[in-house]
View 1 (cartoon, helix red, strand yellow):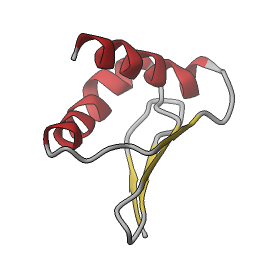
View 2: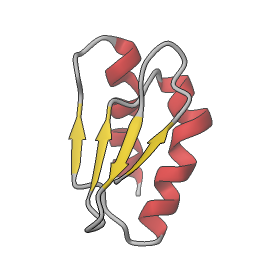
View 3: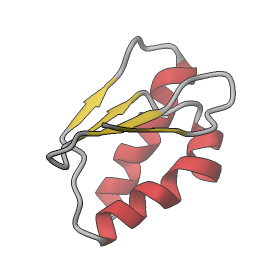
Length: 78
């Protein structure tokens, strides 16, 4: 198991990758933190055709779900 912890301002953002290459993204911080620290690594996964299998939002406070909403906006643009 690999755990990546991304800077997420006052929120949280973790990417867990299992030994069989499955990924879980837990929260995604504030929108600005997503733009600055999280979007690029996630877009690199996408370019490498590595999927995020599960997105988990612990609760709907902006510092946990804001980046997830921004990520969904990015996905619509791609």
